[in-house]
Length: 393
Figure 1 (cartoon, rainbow, N blue to C red):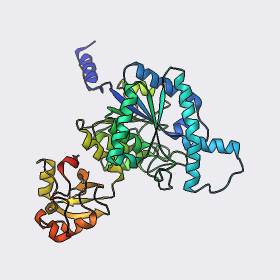
Figure 2 (tube, one colour):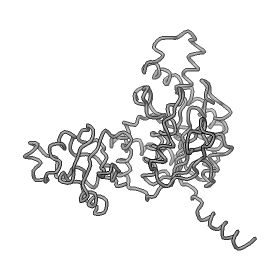
Figure 3 (spheres, rainbow, N blue to C red):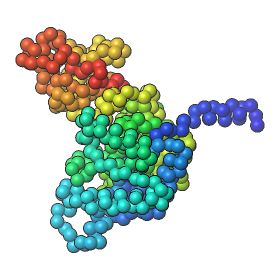
């Protein structure tokens, strides 16, 4: 072996991702159902065996699963094939989720019982994770399940969560999986579906499309490559996966989008193998409070635009955001909502919990903190966003 080849091998080992301590694996609907209204039991069995092996290697694993609606549709077609009432309504899809969720968990229980692994169902809404108390309760429950050796299997609580099932739903369980990774401080989030990864363009229509193996910054080029594809079974698409990657990498986790049909895909990714598209995180692990702030990024209803002095104070000076630095208010939000803090270019500087509503901020933007009470007739402190409730990105 030449010195050049030895150096190349050393460099490859040095750049290889570290073995994760904790991994969240999101299993997409199309992967679990093979694109039909029936479960691909063979695929589910193979994925379960990989999770068991991951745990055997000492890596803590959690599953975020899709597929309940598809299984509910299959069950209803078999038991009541003539049912036609309200098939396009939200209530109908929620009914399908309620039917299918029981079947989905029964399958997981059977698959993991064969390996003496106890599974635990955790149904949650994204709104639950945005509320501080709900976030802490969810985090503590998952930590306890991991500590006692159970395998958490997490799904959106579709029976009460409307955003997930609406026709304009943003994405299947992609964002939820990023929120879970954020909440439990995962090192790696794996988004498994049928696509091999993120391509330069849609490979189903562009024969020149090429996979993007690594992403170090989610910029306009990456967003454009993701597009906005989705189908009638999985509500996600590449755009929702990239948004999930944005959220998870912002709190320090690595994210991989890959095909679950690659043999031993989960094991290979935990070993650092280069399959799919890996999104690198350029930040260190964040403390719990700031990770919680970031769980609300994908649900935010607006934000504020700040001047150059405020940008420097927030980004480099470790300061809170004051009304004097605000030049514009975007969207409609209430006190306590999570908002974007942006430069005049539109780029996010930070995210934080607003102490004032958007209507209040329209009245006090550009003014000194001492003027707030006079302008509003009330005040909630001098800061629009306190530093302790802010995550700089």
